[in-house]
Length: 99
Image 1 (cartoon, rainbow, N blue to C red):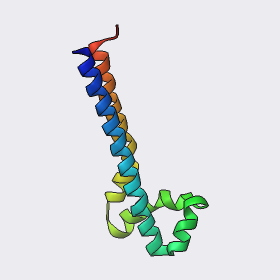
Image 2 (image 1 turned 60 degrees about the vertical axis):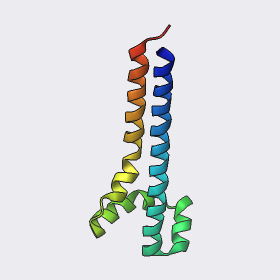
Image 3 (image 1 turned 135 degrees about the vertical axis):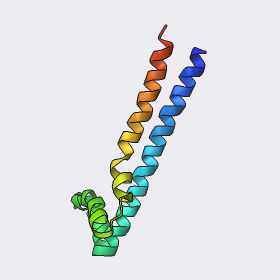
Image 4 (image 1 turned 45 degrees about the vertical axis):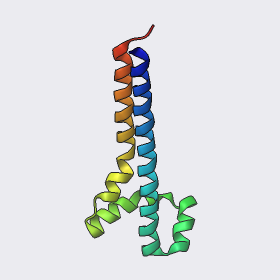
């Protein structure tokens, strides 16, 4: 029973981190698309390294300019999703105890 709960806890942790990584990449590509449509592709590539402030402002721009909450939720919601999964797996591991 204990090993089964540990396996389930590990799978929950792995799934939550994979979901957070997928959300981050989706946010990255969606932000790149918005920056490229506003400033051009060259500025979007340059801003990856030299202007990261554009990437943090892009979700707010999408919200105020288009009324689209998607980028804001995906970009800033990836870490809480991962932490929630890690908390659940930690709870499961503490539930069975350690020997």
